[in-house]
Length: 252
Length: 328
Image (cartoon, rainbow over the protein chains, first blue to last red):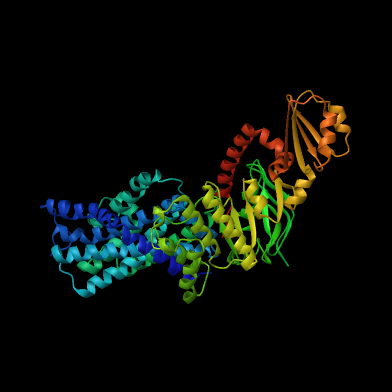
């Protein structure tokens, strides 16, 4: 069912294109860095719900999740470019299953997200929060399933979209709400009830929380709940993604 | 064994029947030309054989595998050059070929030598490491042909392989196609709008119209059906006298110009001119595949405007159908 050679080939293509488009690597980091250095530092009176940390340090794990969210969603939607670049026509005619194609694309998205995560971790370790090697490693490890589930969401939507015009809509109606309701910028424990309820359905909530547990030692939920929720979202989004890829067909 | 054997293939979209019961057999090593007016079903037929579109009913064996039950196996044994460009602009030619080879499961150590060989075949050796976005239309086409061939398919589908190419590139593509047939005995299914192309390349030609194969034979035999020579006469022609001649196959009148099809001109020409009456102008030429096409699919072309509208509609229906039908 899954052809690993083909997955490798697809991943290789994504890696090559990712490193060739360096502007993209930088541009995706702009919004998160604005939040981190302008809002994080500008709200001088903003206090951290976790004792012993500044507000900037408190939102850093949330910004980490934001980077993964933005990179992964954007990557997923980029499959529309594949359609326009004719690349998709070739892979849809190839003797590989749609699950193979989906996995190759998802891994490509994860690669991008992991690299962006690493860049932000290095920036964070240098300017914001003391991080040891183990914490960096744990953050990267957590970034794998998180980026997988969000890339899958992006690919699912991208596979159904017809043109790049929908991009703005997805950003406004999906990406930003996912980010704001995740509690990346505040403590969910003391938030208004409607925010709490909505946040439970937001996969990014659990990504923020697990990052916070790793970096600050305290989160809203226990770690097992975060990991369980992320695993469940991974499974659900993968099923959705493979189904959406199954419906991709050759267009004349 | 036949390379391709279709049994009553049908593809129906919401309001259009694109392919309406096609049964044909294409032996191994044949170059088969598929001709037809726009929207006749050429691309749909090829798409079904290449397992890109699922037939509404009927089936086909391609390289001995069933397109309905073993699509991935079929894909492994065929190569496709699409009507529209499909190489990845963001990669180099070499990377495009590498990706393709991996997707088609070629053993890794064989890939690089094969890429060199294919680039040489299509005269792109010196540009193999350039990005495809820097390529001209002709170079892209050649790269696509190289890609369609790199996994040594038994059957190659070429959908309008020379569309939009300049005459020199077109000739180069033709010679590649001939080479393939001669050196590798590859079965080639070719659709084209250029009659000259079909005539010079194809062993047999199928003319498809409104989803049905209406004529199927060698180019020579098809031309014989129309006649061997065509005579165009302008003047006050005696129609009845001409029609009475035994070697006249048909006579058509277009204003004051008559188009007369002859079994063969030779000595008959003199007899024809004697019988014709007052003549202002005469032109004689051999029957070409264009004439064959016009004869068998001609009505369609004269209704071109309508046809275009229909084709446009078909495109939309296809897109809708695409969204509704599910594939692996």
